[in-house]
Image (cartoon, rainbow over the protein chains, first blue to last red):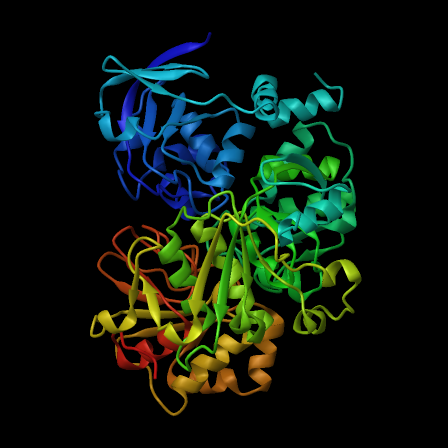
Amino acid sequence: MEKFTGKVWVLGDDIDTDIIIPTEYLALKTIDDMKQYGFSPLRPELAGQIQKGDIIVAGKNFGCGSSREQAPEIIKALGIQCVIAKSFARIFFRNSINNGLLLIEQPDLHKDVKEGDSVTVVMNEHVDYNGKQYPIASLPENLMSIIQAGGLVKAMRKLNGLD
Amino acid sequence: MGETVIEKIIRNNVGHAVKPGDIVTVNVDRVMIHDIFIPFVAEKFEEMGFQKLWDPDKVVLIYDHLVPASQLDDTRHFHTGDAFAEKYGMKNVHRSDGICHQLMTEAGYVKPGNIVFGTDSHTTTYGCVGAFSSGIGYTEMASILGTGTMWIKVPETIKVVIDGELPENVMSKDVILRLIGDLGADGATYRALEFTGSAVKNMSVASRMTIANMAIEAGAKCALFTPDEKTAEYCEIELNDFQKSLVGDEDATYLNIVTYRAEDLVPVMACPSQVDKICDVSTLEGTEIDQVFIGSCTNGRLEDLAAAAEVLKGKKVADYVKLIVTPASRKIYRQAIELGILDTLVEAGAMITHPGCGLCCGRAGGILTDGERVVATNNRNFLGRMGTSKVEIYLASPKTAAACAVAGKIVSPK
């Protein structure tokens, strides 16, 4: 059973993809050029503070708004290993799976967790925080297969006989 | 067992009955890619190892977010797009004809009952003609370009019934803003919205387009209107039996049914900085403003410009207020010229900009700075959307926006 621990950054409800990466930076050439502006309209200092392996815990409707796939790519490039939210917006959810960014829905953790604390995720079972277990669902089979392939690009490369 | 409209469209595509929660692979009828994402789509497509497009005629490439270019690196997107179109034999390329969502229906790329995906969240717009259309990311688009298919989960449906006659000063924008306020910004996430009722039947396709466009702001996967004689005329087709059947059955299963009496609706605004923070315009009156924007894929159509011109005829935009008007397409631009609408707007003091997404997505053509306030007819008032994160954006109908431009502050339209 896969299990990992990370330090938490807490964000609110309705964190939209314009907050995750504003349109003005979308024509920069690479995700690495863009990532320093991640979350800048809301917390300009955040992108510089996130460390590899950290976890974002957010409220409802995380990733709402524009379809920009740079949003999950930037979160991944900043080193975030998973986002735990009350709920996710539809397009962001698909984009994250397709890029191998793990998303977990959990309704109660957000109101209890404090920024800077650590949580432990036990995949397909629960999140451990402060001696309490917060249950999480298993991913559907078709999504698991994309993640297991390492994202949609790798799944397609396999289909085309390249890997 | 009855079916909702989305269930009928998916059944027709996959060849068997479906129910909410089923995961199915659909054959895609059309896709749209815009300029911001084409370099990423092209890169992923080749990285995936595809040699050719599944069907070049079903792919539409539209330059709009960066038209005309405003930053030094913008034209790179056009060169990448042109090279990709050339290499893979794509003929449907629009380089300055207008905003993608306007062109997809206006140029006849989408028909009732189609399944369409686009690299933009407002792809839900094509539900105005009874198509299932939704936004996706560029990686997923690259895989459709190679395979012509995509997996989807059949959504549950929320039915929205609007009966009666809308008051004179209420537009379809006020209807969708009210609905988003009532459902919440995530109230329809993963779900289909199905619109019906006498007020909906009386709406033009353009008005329906405004509603379908903003369905995503309640999180919806798609928004659907039953194709009727107005749809047929707009699409320049005769509806076939399948297209005529796209009405929700009496005994279909709905997650929820929301009902409005059109006469009860009033002009509203989405206040900074959430699309679901809806207030009656009457409660905001007197708030001073710096700019007004009338345009975008939400409200840049001929009827929107005409409604604004009617308010502005013989009047002047208030001192210190900038009024920026952006027709949604070149066709609309020309029609508005021919009908004298643009002349009325210019006479009143409006600045007319070329069809595109520039101001709505905060890239060009009237972006704002700290402490400024704008009344805008587009679809998002998020932090930083039209300039800095300290700009206050109030979303409104074209009638309300035009009235505010004259007054120099927030007022209700007459």
